[in-house]
Amino acid sequence: MTSPRNIDVVFHVAAPPVEHVFGCPVRCCAAAAVVGDPCRTEGDAARAWELLGWRAHTSVGDGVRTQVEWHESRRDGLAVT
Image (cartoon, rainbow, N blue to C red; front, side, top):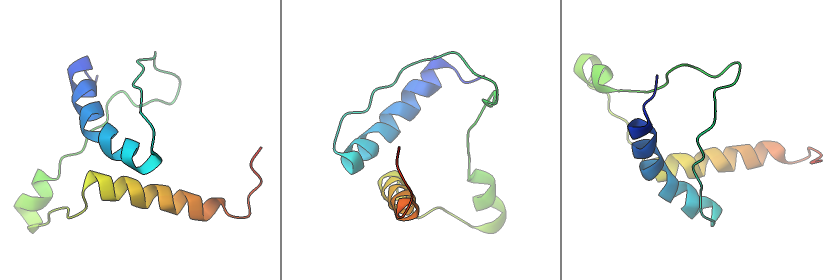
């Protein structure tokens, strides 16, 4: 299970780029898990580096911006209700 410390670290890494892209503050609210939530999520590319020499070259900020742009491009022509 993800600890409150891990959530705090992730929030402080991810919040500034998200705030920059959206132009507004981000709030973090703890909530109880719901059906379908994973018990644990995390990524570590260390093994990919060890075995393949692969390293990510996309910053968190660039990744957030690209993700938002992709979603916005898919929204074109869809009715928003």
